[in-house]
Image (cartoon, rainbow, N blue to C red):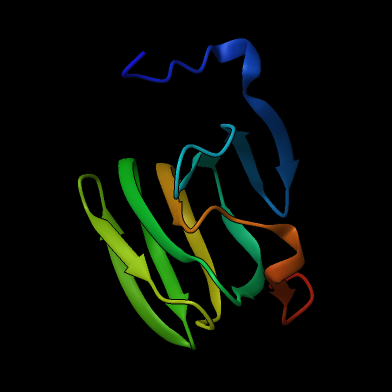
Length: 115
């Protein structure tokens, strides 16, 4: 077989810190997550290992990366290196690709709820 199909029934769904997540099982050397938010991710964090690649499918917002504000809108892709503090505000639907796949043990929450 030269493909991998993940059915919607295999997607883990979770809500946390102002975001809704649809987490796909890891595929090869990346993780894939559908992220939806009406307000933003209100918990600042960084990841020790993974690079985060967000593709904005719909909406617009602002990422705060090590306290630098970066505006994003539909169609934009932003790649964020490990050890970069992240949180974001806005109403957006995004695809998040993590390389290597995200692991909870490598995520560090740096501030309590932002708002």
